[in-house]
Length: 147
Image 1 (spheres, helix red, strand yellow):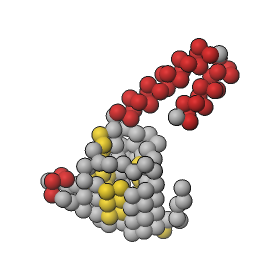
Image 2 (tube, helix red, strand yellow):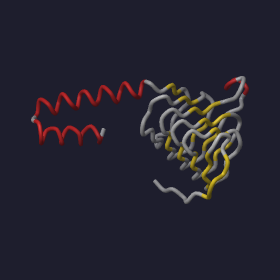
Image 3 (tube, rainbow, N blue to C red):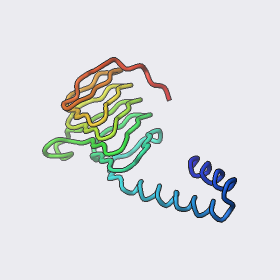
Image 4 (tube, rainbow, N blue to C red):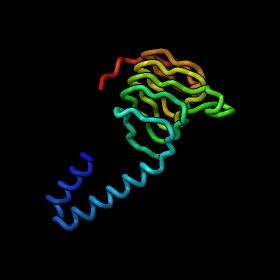
């Protein structure tokens, strides 16, 4: 909503009220359409951040912590039998997940972890590390992220 207000004020100053309203309504419509493109079945914490909420698939049984950033085209879910097997990913607090990443199976992503773009995570990830690749491997220790 803040972005919508900023865009409206900027357009109002440069182009007048009518154009500002039209541009704001167009932006709001696009934002709603993008959000509806998400196939999300699990409960989301209030603090989750979805900078580009398109193509995100979250299995219904995955568990999400607080202050998680999930970028576009991310898949988080079970392997094989899907969520019916009870095997689900658990993502702890302050995790950042790069675009196109897949987090699959009964695994845990530790606090303050960073998952690189297009990574395929099929094993547990420790706290405070960065992983990348397919399959994902630890590439460095992460610094603690505060929000």
